[in-house]
Length: 283
Ligand code: NAD
Image (cartoon, rainbow, N blue to C red; front, side, top):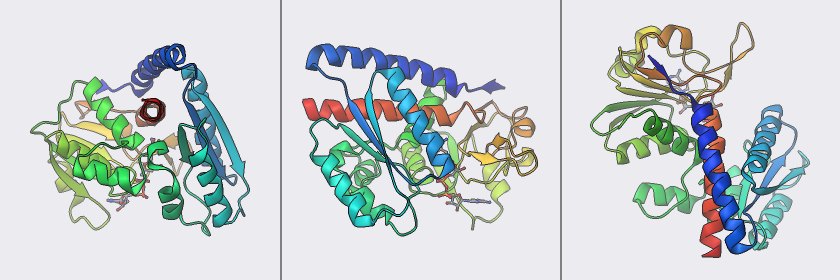
């Protein structure tokens, strides 16, 4: 069994971005700029946004974090986004989700200029993924595909099973696996006999948000297991994934740990996407 070290793989991706940013500064006289908007004080969002700023600093990407009050109106938030769309010094805009209930996430996402949408959530970027036209790829699925590549796993011809059908992970990663020529099955809360389906998998991607839901009897020997979950262990309160790592690791061919698997790759891909947005704007 091999542990797929997302921390190490993401570190080398970020190093490559740092070198690229140095070259961009020499060529264009400025570095890419990412603006992150956080609304309110959701504790998980505070940590995620802080980590994004840290990664920008490590890569030499200039960045701003705007913290807006929990009770900001949707109209004011949309105005802020439009202002950033028009700001020539801003290459990438990221609005940290989830937003407070009174604000429509869909309206906020569609207001971000497509060419500054570093998260790849804008409807035009989503359409681009599904229609195979140029687009910004969402960071977490992109990071998963890079983990597979770094681990030497070619999805071509393999049976891939994805648990979870969210817009940000399950659906786009299923499409990317399909484009990499895997035979893909997408599972969700209404899937009957989930374990029977997951046992068919050569590659199992789990993005359900249910602590340790994937048990040893759900995985066949040699399966490559990618755990996207960021959960709390109901007993210890410690950060854990959707996969019962200790039980599944001895059976798996390769597996990502939590923390240190998909999470750091998401942030590294965000750095890449910020550079991609910059390049589209300067060229
Ligand atoms: P979500 O809640 O939007 O979607 C969860 C999906 O899982 C749903 O489609 C649901 O049908 C399915 N599901 C839930 N319970 C199930 C069960 N018992 N059996 C089968 N299917 C089930 O979640 P999301 O936003 O896709 O996130 C999923 C997990 O990934 C969360 O733990 C989240 O924190 C984590 N996440 C991590 C990163 C990262 O960078 N590491 C990024 C995004 C999300």
